[in-house]
Image (tube, rainbow, N blue to C red; front, side, top):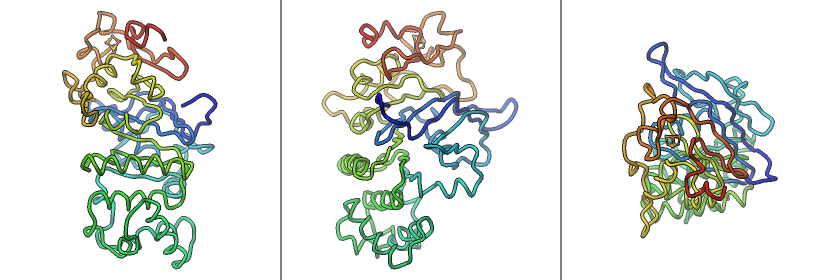
Length: 332
Ligand code: SF4
């Protein structure tokens, strides 16, 4: 978050587990994250790193098998972990919007798109049917869906993947939320549509004055959209910094490898699986620094002592014992 910006979302010391006893799996470990007003904050990590669990914990969408062991999630002045089911339902949609990877799964196949957009407006804003319909039309135009009236009359299966995602974004922003959670919103789309959706999200952020938590496994996409980046590994943040600074001067070997993995000719498609080795099984996270089995800089201390997340420059945090030896550390 940039200096002087107010916090929109503040997550502190969040730990979430699944299962019991010997089978307990900690998906998120003492995680801290802050999203500023009008900021696009990317949470980036490999599959299973805990990014989607974190994203779903915010609006209370974790499965019943999840246990919130500790931590605080504050949206503006509201402590979300203290809300009951009804309180969370009131927050969802009205103050926190959500967009997911597979828009087809999150649209009702048996309802016309227009009805689905209008329903949220009637429920959260108490609009009449006519007023909701008029506002739905404006929203569909706002997300740049051509032939808006036809789209509103359509069923989801009559729309392309990109159109469905735009319709889902229209629903997510229908009540002008302060925060939009976008969980892998472009993963299922081809590169051209992906670029269009990223540009749309950036424009909506400014136009609607909202912050976006952008969850992705794709560092190339993150580079195209984020103001601030937090890198998650084995359930914890290992580096967090303003995007320009992180890409120029990474302070964690994992981030450094991820940046190297983005193809030079085409920055898109720099998938995190390019990093050598495998992400740890959440049931058996290595002691010390969880990245040590894959880290080219690992030394003996890394096998035993977990590195704390330390601020090396304003807004630039890294959890690495040897951050100062990385290119970004020499002038941090
Ligand atoms: Fe690598 Fe050690 Fe830094 Fe972990 S603490 S990232 S193992 S150098």
